[in-house]
Length: 459
Ligand code: AMP
Ligand code: GLY
Image (cartoon, rainbow, N blue to C red; front, side):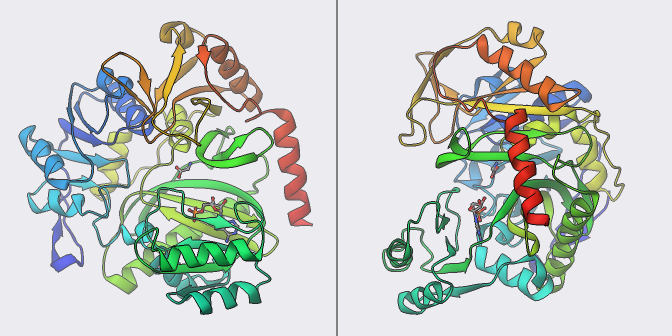
């Protein structure tokens, strides 16, 4: 057992001994696939704490508790009642409410950040200022404002080519970018005013930053203090419609290639991204005395001005974690306990590509809380070499209700992206009903366009 001194009141963060009973917190597909890996690769009993009746989680977990993710005491009570040896948090909501602190106070080791560390995700101005001080080349120009007039003047000085970001957690909906969600100067000014005067996202502060142009990708890592495991890069697609058109969603799907890179990434890009994450952990420790622990999700953009960090999340990505877990050979439980105990061991990944495609209700994301009216035979899908993961719940009438999330994810691996996509396509054909999906994700045409875009950036 190893104890690390965190800053938060010089509290000793507990690390796990042998893990016979592990509790996974989270309601969606990324929690399901984490449970699936642990059931497949270890003898541990797996408990789930979920806000909804996710059919995948309910089927896989040895036992589960339905409860609110906005109230740490429910999670602490459940973890205690099952004598959890370790808790793994896969979702952001409860982190800034201090669920990790609350669990550690009763002596339960947790893979997740304390409330202080979760600021890297929940307080965008803190994260941006930290990076500007320690990694200035990795952040765009930005300023943080409380006053509308000054914020609007700054946006105008950048020709309105800005991203406007409320500083707190906005469930992926608060960031609006000139040319995408904001049509021109008046819309930029109007949105700044709404964020600051109407406090639509709470904190009454806004970041106005230079709009970047480039190609985005995700690198997810598992971190503890300065120890870092970086997983293969994944690219996800947030726009609703093929060809990256339409409104933003929580993501319609993703792909990853065999190995760590993406078709448009060079080893030096990947190494640079790893360096940015490593340096962030150091900077965080220097500035706060606090240690980071948990899944750290880095959203990067390759631009003409180099590699930029768009944001960090202290959780695995959805769908990116599905790509990562689909090829992880090792037990994620062993990887996490090794990391927490100072025995870092790089996990092995199958040398395969993967594709994930989300099927969502036709009115998504315009309307939430929709029924996803589909039927399919999961065994048949599995026989094709694909899997179904749920980011939705089953209601008492047996229907899939997406609530505040999306729908079902079809995931497959293959020697190439094309082969993985073909399996997803075949699985998709077995799903009947009323749904929307993007069939261009991982297609040759899509990747050719991305390559062309990146050639332009590197020129
Ligand atoms: P965030 O919530 O910070 O990840 O932002 C959501 C999305 O907004 C990102 O995935 C980007 O596509 C976009 N975005 C954020 N910041 C910028 C920026 N400075 N320039 C262009 N797009 C941005
Ligand atoms: N794929 C987007 C996210 O998990 O934030």
